[in-house]
Image 1 (cartoon, protein in one colour):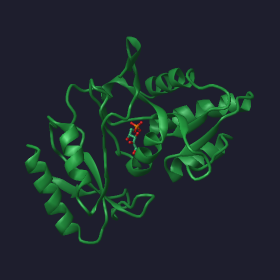
Image 2 (spheres, helix red, strand yellow):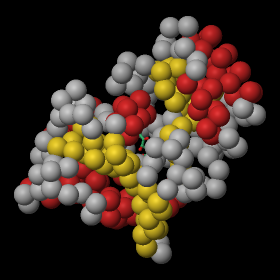
Image 3 (cartoon, helix red, strand yellow):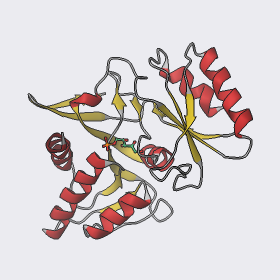
Image 4 (cartoon, helix red, strand yellow):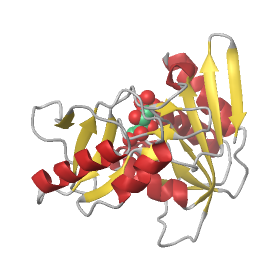
Length: 229
Ligand code: 5RP
């Protein structure tokens, strides 16, 4: 699986040109991309990156990739990031690694978003992977009830749980928020659900990425497949 992730990352790297401003995703697949990018930078490629998490910031620094922020530059040429699920319209579930807020800000500021993954992430319909919803801890009971109502209005339902870190404490995002993971099974209309969740005051962001990905690079046993939107 790790080999496949690296192959997808290597294929995405072929799109990178000298002078580009890049969004750097989070997760094990995106980490391969940062490492391979670091090798090209060591060989003379000049790029600058905006990391989507503190973990990616540390990886990029370790690999010698120069970093900036979205305050210092006004757009990104390409963001390369992983995903937890990818559907045939290139809608995504993201946030398994907890970085969905910064990932979405960075993707939205990019001319193109290339999703890299092993082909186990390709699904006919989103929803088997628990949907991460980033929330403000204050008033969580009210926010959870509003989320349940949004689910019902969009014809989905399922168990919700506040994400825990490995040490058993509540998982806290880079932005200081919590994540509620919702086991929905099947999301028939992800665009409507995305809209409904975004309208809830205590929801900071959710892991449905609708219309953001420009292409997906999927690595599988039979080779690499590139799907364009
Ligand atoms: C982090 C993410 C990741 O891109 C997603 O979880 C995929 O991770 P991996 O490449 O490790 O499978 O959305 O918030």
